[in-house]
Amino acid sequence: MRPFYPILLDISDQLCVVIGGGPVAERRVSGLLDAHARVRVVCLTATERLQQWAAMGCIELRMEPFQPAHLDDAMLVFAATNERALNEWVARSAKERNLLVNVADAPEQGHFIVPSVVRRGDLCLCVGTGGQQPKLAAQIADELAERYGTEYEKLLQLLGKLRNEILSATPANSPLRQEALERLHAQTPKLLAMIRAGLDPEQEARAVLNYLLHQPLPKEGQQ
Ligand SMILES: C[C@@]1(CC(=O)O)c2cc3[nH]c(cc4nc(cc5[nH]c(cc(n2)[C@H]1CCC(=O)O)[C@@](C)(CC(=O)O)[C@@H]5CCC(=O)O)C(CC(=O)O)=C4CCC(=O)O)c(CCC(=O)O)c3CC(=O)O
Ligand SMILES: NC(=O)C1=CN([C@@H]2O[C@H](COP(=O)(O)OP(=O)(O)OC[C@H]3O[C@@H](n4cnc5c(N)ncnc54)[C@H](O)[C@@H]3O)[C@@H](O)[C@H]2O)C=CC1
Picture 1 (cartoon, rainbow, N blue to C red):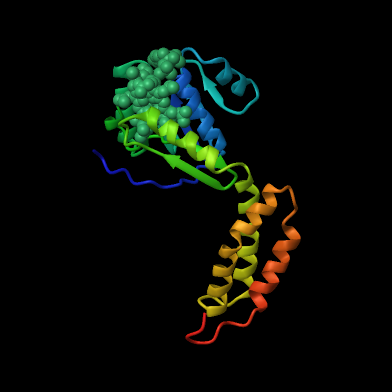
Picture 2 (picture 1 turned 30 degrees about the horizontal axis):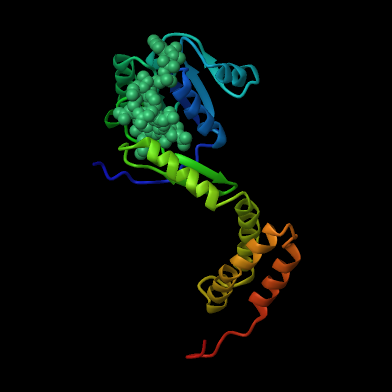
C-alpha cells in the first residue's frame, strides 16, 4: 500500500505529454483537456477521438515512435502504450528530466495515479483506490455523480461570489467576517433548494448577503 497524497493541480496552459494513442491514452487526454492543459500525444496509431481532437487543433498529435525529446518542456508525462518495455523507457526518461510521470500498466513505476473524477463546475470529486480496484473507484464516482448533480455548479458560482463579497467587505480575521462566512454556509441548503426549483437565487442571495453583513453580532456568551 502506498499512501498517495491527493492534490488538485493547476495545469492550465502547461504542456502534458501522453505516450500512446489507445483508449487509455484517450481517457488521459480527455481529463487533461478538461483541465485546460496543452497536450502532446505521441503514438503509432490513434483512436478516432484523438484524431478528431488533433484535426480541431485541440491537441498536438505526433504519429511517430517515442523519443525522449518528445518530453521537452513537459510538466507531466503519461506512459500509456501497450508495450511494457516502452512504458518503462518513458518512465525512466521522465525521471531523468525530473518530470512527474504516470505509468498505466505499472503504477509503481510512476509518481502518481489517476483517479476517477466527477466535475460539477468548480466542484471536483476524485476517487482513488490506491490502484487496488479501479472499477470500484469508477462505481463510487458514479454514486457521487448521482448524489451531487449539476445544480452544484450554479451553487458554487453563487457561494463563491458571495464569499468574495464578504471577504472584500469585512476586515481580515474579524468576528464579523467569521460570523458572515458561517451564516453564508448555513444558507447552502436554502440556495440549493432554490436552484433545484428552477428559481434564480441571485435576489435571495443579495438579501442573504445584506443580512450577513448587517446583522448585529451576538453578544458574548449568546448564540
Ligand atoms: C493505477 C491506475 C493507473 C493510472 O494511474 O494510470 C490503474 C491501473 C490499471 N487499471 C487496469 C484496468 C482497468 N482500469 C479501468 C478503469 C479505470 N482505471 C482508472 C485508474 C487507474 N487504473 C489507476 C488507479 C486508480 C485507483 O486508485 O483505483 C480510472 C479510475 C481512471 C482512468 O483510467 O481514466 C478508470 C475508471 C474511469 C471511470 O471513471 O470510468 C478498467 C475498467 C474499464 O476500462 O472499464 C479496467 C479493466 C478492469 C480491471 O482490470 O479491473 C489495469 C490492468 C490492465 C491490464 O489488464 O493490462 C491497471 C494496471 C495495474 O493494475 O497494474
Ligand atoms: N490505467 C488504466 O486505466 C488501464 C491501463 N491499461 C494498460 O494500459 C495499456 C494501454 O491500453 P490501451 O490504450 O487499451 O492500449 P492500445 O493497445 O489500444 O494502444 C497502445 C498504443 O500504444 C502506441 N504505441 C505502441 N508502440 C509505440 C511507440 N514505439 N511509440 C509510441 N506509441 C506507441 C500504439 O500506437 C497505440 O496507440 C495497456 O497495455 C494496459 O496494460 C489497460 C486498461 C486500463
